Image 1 (cartoon, rainbow, N blue to C red):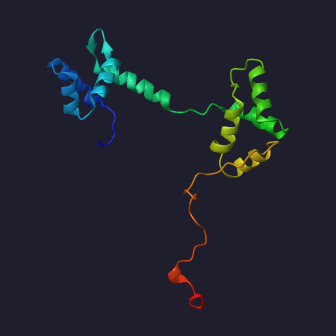
Image 2 (image 1 turned 120 degrees about the vertical axis):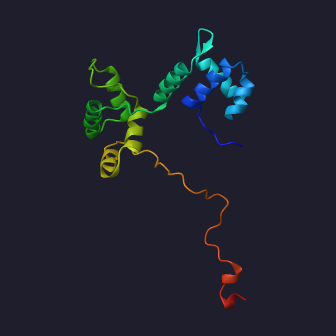
Image 3 (image 1 turned 90 degrees about the vertical axis):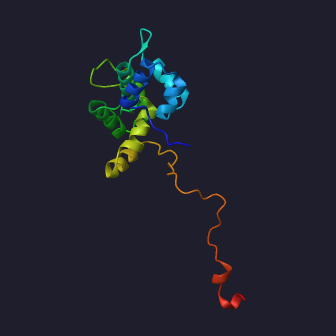
Length: 168
């Protein structure tokens, strides 16, 4: 099985050249090392007035790639409001409700309770994270870091060869 790779702008140009030469999707796919369905999706992406436009396809790809990047929804003024409310022991649910119902302020963004928790647990680092979590009224379940699988493994096992001589 071949390693996954995305279609590059050079591949898009090769697709356009192949179509101009009269090649079908299967031949283009085989020449470039992609599945035929990948070429079909690419042709739909770059479809412009009945023809394939590799520049339109590249622009569409770049636009979609930008939207895939997760952005942090909490800006600095919003974080200040959240931090102030945490210090007076408001729950993230109450803070989210306050942000949604507060008068429209262009700098303060309404965010969900889950976003506040995620920011506290995943985006903050070190001592600042510990202090912020201490401000929560209820600590909730301890989040477990996923590590090595431990099910089905016995602990404290001594091999037969490693037993003391008295046991024999």
